Image (cartoon, rainbow, N blue to C red):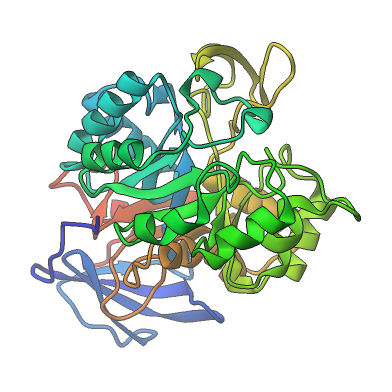
Length: 400
């Protein structure tokens, strides 16, 4: 699935004197947007168009892309309806996420298939969603984390075909355990546009290597829901860390990974091979609260979400908040932050025209003030929360 709202018509809007976050540097320039796309970059003060906005040095970055999120702001992608999905799309946008995958937990077989079919229908008319990330159902019972064990399945071609038929081309990522899905099946599944992602597994190194040879090129929330690295039985982690082309999710909320472990991952993996995700759940943005998620009661204190036995139940930190925390704690540059949260996720789904600022790219953008606070989000050239006829940016910035 690719964004459907492609348009290069309409007025040319100029973001004058913007500090642009490019892949390799910060650049003060004028940014020209037309329709849903970035028309061009121009030297500061030289951009010409129909509407001029003086950003006075405010930062403009690519909108973030969250490839692993179960919901937030009270919305659960597994249980809620189309209107809740629409509300979630706006809330994610207001936080700085311009595109996302609706991530579904595994459930009882018939229920899960029906839910995949229903979700695929929802996504047809909500361009913020790039598709579905199905976290299961071919996973290890021993490393289920907070996922409902009732949804776990043994692999069969018939079951995989039923999932693909229900998704109708919207399934973009599937988390699987290499000891459950035969490596000979991976390439066939991926030929249907699905990125197979290793996770919730107790696979040996040999089983993991076989999955990689079979075509797997991704890992779900690295280190979580998999065995620790051991010097005699290294398990999946050694392969996932040492294979450069394996792109690994990291949850950078400060709860799922120790800060030094996160620093180590960022050091040993190539820059293009790490994707920041939220793994957020419905209590994200709700403060201290309790809700049912994935078949169990989950309590959040506003920073950490756990089941009654203390098991982490996803994150309650949005992707932008996690990335800005990472910027502070790890001292990463704005370009690196945007690589982790925008361009790498776009590359993960092989979508070259989102996740970065450049001519012909989609105008999925966030605007930050001098304090780093988000003041506007553009999704496909339209301001999130402003309505179809609303101003592109706050009126105080318009000069013509």
